[in-house]
Structure formats: structure tokens, C-alpha cells
Image (cartoon, rainbow, N blue to C red; front, side, top):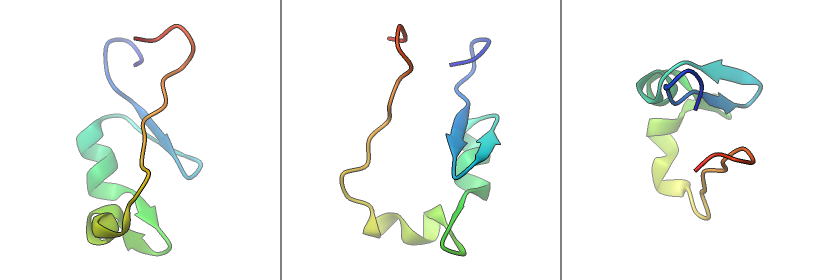
Length: 51
């Protein structure tokens, strides 16, 4: 969370919103939405002190 918004840092890039992340994030040359069936053990990590 940053300034009340959920920002995402993934693969050395910052995404300002969750929608931005899921629309633009790429892994291995493929958009994440194209490879989501391959995810397992996926977790969101919070910074210390975040709830």
C-alpha cells in the first residue's frame, strides 16, 4: 500500500494499480493473464507493519 493505493512491484517494474499490473505485467514474454493457469504457490507479501 502506498498513499492508500495498492501498488505492485514485479520483475523490477512498478505498477500503480492492480488493474495496471494484470493488464501489463509480463513473465517469460507472456502476459500474466495468459499463464495464470500455471501459477501455484502464489502469495502476496506485505511489508513489515502492513496489515
